[in-house]
Length: 77
Image 1 (spheres, rainbow, N blue to C red):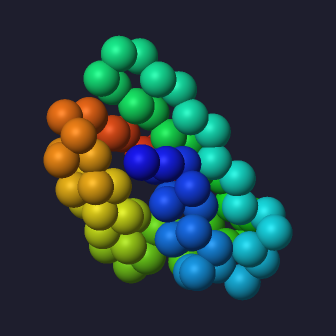
Image 2 (cartoon, helix red, strand yellow):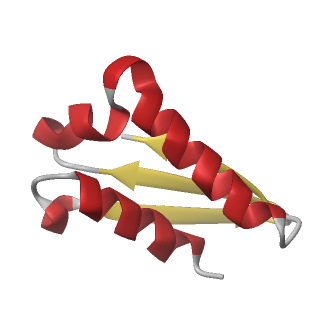
């Protein structure tokens, strides 16, 4: 499963400037660290009020990885 592409698609659906979305991936065994970068003006949309959207994105990614026995962390920059 391509977690990097899944995260990028979710972020592109939320932001106003989807061309500015980029995702980097670091794999260390069963741990996957994804770093999501968006335009500064779109940061509020990705984080949401009180971090609700960011938390939902992280939960979605963890659920997607749970079936394959991987651990995913998502950092938003």
